[in-house]
Image (cartoon, rainbow, N blue to C red; front, top):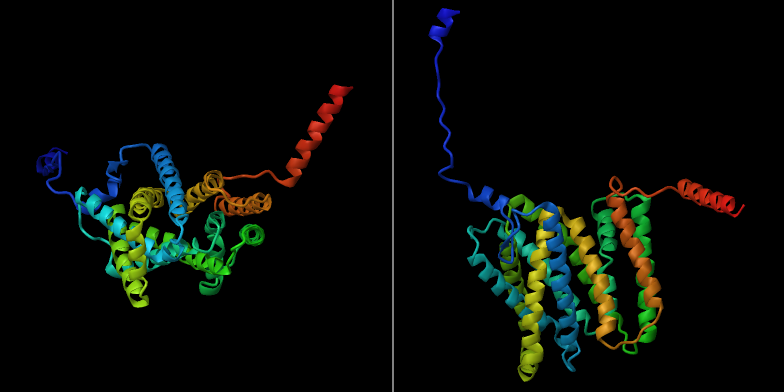
Length: 367
């Protein structure tokens, strides 16, 4: 043992207290900034509360200003021009925010950004244009039913099979949409199916964009400001080329120049609130996934419908309520289907046993 101890070699390893260099990629993974504020040091529950509050506050303002702009007489044909102005503001805001970031490198490939920009143009441009033909609550109720194109694409493109709960959710949403649309066509004198076509196409693009953004941000660890800057600046070029080719740029510019405050002024506030809202949605996607983000934004849309009837005079029928409840049931079934392990609903047998026990206890008290 003594010989062994004498022949033993001692190796010393020194570990520095602080590393000399740190990979920017790792640093970015630990830090999450939303509109300049660092949320990384907060608890997960506090991050969720702040992101949800940001989505609701900024997108409710966004919805109010969007409907206010389209209430201007003569503006309805210029939905694509509004989207162009909106994308220009978003690109500017993203560039400003990126200047305050420690790591300004572009992480996500150009090819991915070109796809995201195309889907974003389809989502926002078609959605804005549909307001020239649709009642605002009808547009919002369609936006709540993103599950339908997702399921149709999954069946025909990927050959997926869905369970009974998913199919029931899609059926509830479909019947709710049909009911809501029929009610709207009866109470709205200028109802036009062109708006239904436009918002349906926007819905298909919107169904794809959440998953593409989630995959890109997690795979390449891109920041929110980077995602907004590059996707909206590329989208701006798409819309500019489209308006130039269709000769829609000149008439829209002339009209907006005649009403600068009601168009460019409202568009600035509309874009600013929308930009802040997008930052919180992207943070939700990065922290909690696309499903949680869709659930939160759906709740926000339901509140937007109520505020739309409150602030803007429009025809109303109780069929809006019943069809809206049917859509909400479909949304709940969709959430339940994705979270069966966390959400446990009582079976019909258990419900029946509870009812019987209450009846027996009430009878015993009467006796």
